[in-house]
Amino acid sequence: MNICIIGTGYVGLVSGACYSDIGHNVTCIDINKEKIESLNKGIVPIFEPGLEELIKKNVKADRLKFSIEFEQGIQGANIVYLIVGTDPLSNGETDLTYLKEAAKSVAKYLTDYKLIAIKSTVPVGTCRKIKKLITKEAGHSNFDIASNPEFLREGSAISDTFNMERAVFGVETDRAEKLLRKLHEKFKTKVVVTNLESSEMIKYAANAFLATKISFINEIANVCEKVGADVTKVSEGIGLDHRISPFFLNAGIGYGGSCFPKDTSSLVKIAEEVGYDFKIVKDVERVNYEQRFKVIEKLKEAIGGKLKGKRIAVLGLAFKPNTDDMRGAPSIDIIYKLQQCEANIIAYDPIASENAKKIIPNLKTTNSILEAANGAHALIILTEWPEFQDIDLEVLEKIMDNNVIIDGRNVFSISMMKSLDFYYASIGRETIY
Ligand code: NAD
Image (cartoon, rainbow, N blue to C red; front, side, top):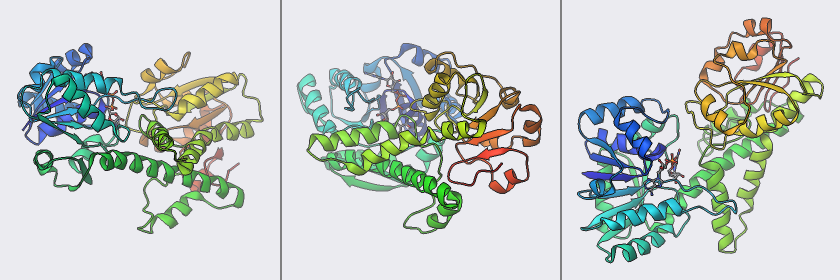
């Protein structure tokens, strides 16, 4: 099939690379000229494991192209995907400016039948609005609209796409369903076919549910600390029940990223607009926001209140491991707070430092864990990068000024920490000193 993708960001690029790898001809379009020029030179603008290789392979096989020319991509395409950003506005509503602009660009070149599929996460009712807009702009309705939300996770986006657990097709016609089934044939996935509204809602409900699991286990963790229970054991104990499942039960400093924060607030707004007060999701958001500051409380407790002038090593900046994405990362608020307390911060992240510096002014970063830890009064862990598990803690003991570790992601086991000479505080577990 010939596929045109409008919006070559995280999702558009990964989807384009994966669709081309299973044999489709894909053209990825973007308005960002520099991004397309880089991609055409073989430079991949984001870090995602395996993506660069996959792109190179399919560009070489002439199945994957990048362009700023909408006409070139749209003409001849069976399916046109809209995968542009849908960031929140300051009032919590979703900004549909990019989506509307992308839809207008498609309408301009809509000469024969196409399926226009929206993969961006959009408020319920948006696909129908975009259908009206395209009909008006194109002057005809020789197209179908579909909602085909995306569930990939940054950091494992490629394997998530190749091994997708389900595909959701919000469609109005058999023709649209057939086209989406054909595109997904080789993924051998379960398919949920429904109307546009249910499909749009599935995406929000999925993310809100996962966010709820995280805030739930974080509240359990906060109680565990006060009653002498260990949240990692509690998670294990409840996660073995298949009705609960072990996933998204890691206590810590809460979720971040470009999706959960915006999708939960969007869902609250969607409900509000139809007169419904979505109480659970509002609390999930509040719990998540407050949770990130637990590391500051624990840090103050460990080093006697005042942080002014104290050298604090921060390990991990990205909102989760295996990505350089800083959007919505809890580290941002935590570092702002440390800066307000006039702490002397030195941060290390394997790949997100450059992106972090664009968001956090005056952030000092280093290229190694040891450099960050050298002479530090305390070290705090904000992202569970796998390499942090391999830190030589005996070396750390020697080079830190004060052996304090505040572990916001429960990276180290309590039994191991008991064998070392650290003040060690984590989330929902006993503090060792
Ligand atoms: P992104 O910001 O990385 O990429 C969006 C791209 O669209 C950018 O390259 C931008 O230049 C381009 N663009 C904007 N307007 C355009 C236009 N008129 N024509 C062509 N290109 C245009 O965003 P993303 O992370 O890929 O997210 C895209 C959508 O997918 C969002 O709705 C998001 O909520 C959803 N989503 C994201 C993830 C994720 O993990 N990032 C997962 C699931 C769903």
